[in-house]
Length: 297
Image (cartoon, rainbow, N blue to C red; front, side):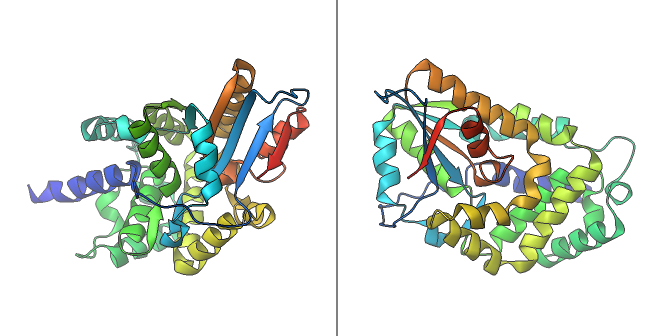
């Protein structure tokens, strides 16, 4: 039984990581700018077909709540919300099954697929954040993306002011209470499949970038949260420029989803990770290049 404990610990941590972690009921606050864009067809004067695109942060501090009242107002106007993945409908057993299907290395171990520096830093963080000082070798059969999730979850659980995916979680919970339709850009299963299909070197880079953020701890998270609340698109673009290489597929899927619903009619409230929206290769620029009207609120 003792030999299974590291595995059970990992499963519980990953399940907590993948599940929506913040269903905080929040009252609206006032800010001058928000990280949301109104997308319409260029020649649609009636504005009957609108997709509101809200960028979200995967890790924030608690100062993100209460949310700006304009977000609540826009949400109330829309009959449907669009999210990247709705993990609230996935059971723990389904998550475990998917993890075993997509998260295990084949004929190698984690020390063979990470650089020496990546391995050492990941190992040090796991020892830092686990009470019994577990080492990375306890999770040697798991892919780098799983280790990245593990370290993210451990750092958040040890930082009382950090929240994971709070904005999507808040609006998903709210939409379910309000009886609004929730549309997914990709299913939880396809999300994990996508992560596992990335090359080990790319997964290692994703892990390395996460480690850099965690090493800065509250300073980096506080800065990102402040930029998000101010709707500082340039600051957010610079902050997340390192992460573009990992997001080509999901960025394209998100773009296609937004344009699809712009053609179908109605008002939609879409939430996507802010890193997919910013920069020259981001969704905002893609929409503008295709002739859509995109206005920051």
